Image (cartoon, rainbow, N blue to C red; front, side, top):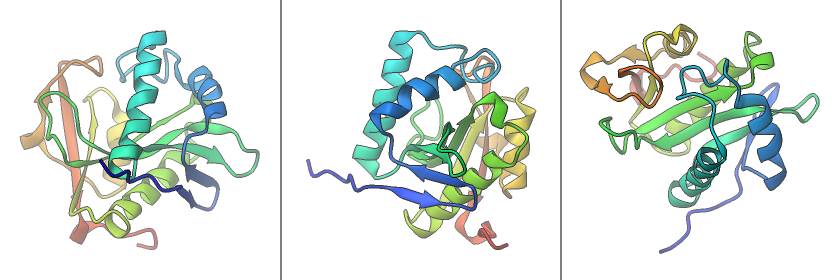
Length: 187
């Protein structure tokens, strides 16, 4: 099988979305594998879950040319978490749909980093990766997550919700936005 891997790096005003480096993993897990960050993401991961997650992130890049990339703060090089694109592979969900997702360390919350990174990822989905529609997944109690989805212009898609307890609730809720509705980074 031919590899789709090409080096990826995308800059925003304050952030760099880029390929993972081996030295990113320890600070990423240290800062994001906490009860607060993982509350609606299935809980704190043990070693096996961390290893499996890393392999999935790397395989998305290999298989599709995009993944949930490392998010680095330009100012000081700190890994804030991840944000990017993958193909939905959640059991029961809209499999294969382009999905935007993010996970940031707690001390990065409330500073607009997730908005900046997610908007850049959506823009890339439509301009670089040819998506016609992008979805995002969360659970109803995770108001900050679906609040960001709404801010991005995404609409609630109850018709795509599906039963799955991977994120600590009984149902995963879906938001989506189509290419024609994306206002772009300047909109």
